[in-house]
Image (cartoon, rainbow, N blue to C red):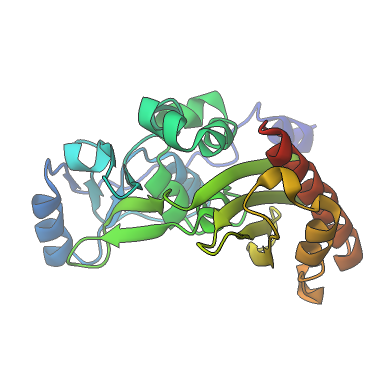
Length: 272
């Protein structure tokens, strides 16, 4: 009976009290950097949704630097060169519904809005999702397919923002219907020579994502051979991609199916 109560969440698995710790709330990146340099042992967090999970798992906090009130980290902008910059403290809800994100990369906005629960979407941040390093978190897959880059402060510990070059982006799609066994983020980039490069990241809840690439033939997504490109992508998955939920062959099969679905949606200019 006790095991059933614990498993259903009726009884908390731990009633341990959290030891008091100093809390800092900087309001600028410069202030945060000074605190980080002065207290290298400090934990850095914004929404704290992942931090609370780590605390429940036994992690202790000696000192907390909350960057939740740093306005610079909550900005979204688009440069003249087509570089979309998303502040690290932008929440999943704010980012996925931001007019600039939805206008420039609608597929990414749709995918971003599909991850996590409603409660986490309003508190969790893009930076926290990336920095957590958990294989079950989906943002690294999305950003990996887009070829995104991270901006850090001078200390190298504070993630300030994410940069996505949208100038050569033709299409982005995400398939998570087979979670936890397989998820696939796929972006089609123009190569500048009249062709395209398909870049995908295949992941599961139990393994890090694998970057897969395949050349396109035409600059028009409607002319792509979806099945052939999907087979090329899936064939790049190594034997180590096998995990608790399926063999390597099964995961290759799923990735081929998901990639075909996304590529066909790209040809129709819809979302899978």
